[in-house]
Image (cartoon, rainbow, N blue to C red):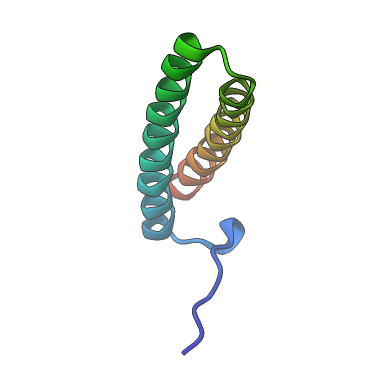
Length: 79
């Protein structure tokens, strides 16, 4: 049996709740990695850690936007 992709427009409330939990876990992990990179950058002032901080901040922004979309869709389904 082929596993289907997650499509927001066709998702049920249970699927959206599952995606929100995954999204929250991912955001927490990104924040932890971001703080570890910031601490390492403050110690070494390395260009590599500066780039990693920028990349992690971008991913955190994207995850926050996707969480907003999921929350909006959840509100539409619960009305």
